[in-house]
Amino acid sequence: GAGPSFSGGGDLDYMRRAGGASREQNLAGTKAMAKMLQSLRDLPQATLALVHGNCMAGATGVVAAADIAVATESAHFAFSEVRLGLTPATISPHVVAAVGARNARRYFLTGERFDALEAKRMELIHEIVADEAALAARGKEIAAMLLQGAPGAIAGIKKLIREVSGRPLDDAMIASTAANIADRMASAEGQEGLAAFFEKRRPNWVPKP
Image (cartoon, rainbow, N blue to C red; front, side, top):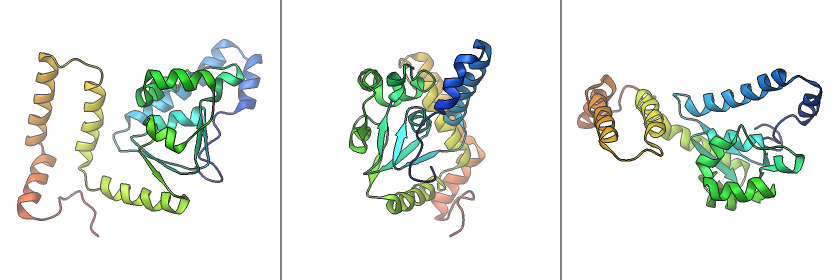
């Protein structure tokens, strides 16, 4: 986010005007929000949220939909919809997946603000840094680590996580995960990565220093 905060959440004036719009018009807007969050979650590229200042309501959904999230010590969060007579509906699949139903029940219902330590405890964010300068520096470090990974493998890992989450470890799961790694070992990326390891060089997807 640019400026003093990551994001204050949705456009409240737009929501107020929704009272005079048709249900179809309102659905178009809310479905667009839901699709945006789904697209963010499902991007083949790795995504990183760097959070400072306030991160409220719908903005927490952006953080939860990102793959990696880092926040400053002074960042504050809230699922504040309930205090406006609203529900955190479109962000709920992403937030509940990140923080769990138990934490969601508390913070969705109270709408209370919580700090970065609490956000980390409930796994809405992964790391806390001291300030915005440290946030920018850590963002560059994580981006550099991500660039070491093969693009196809990153996309495959994100898809793999979605496919195994919440599913039982049954014969179908064993078959699909075994096929996944078998195919990756024989892939061009897999062969390049293994060759680079044994030849003690960078794989061809890693940027030159």
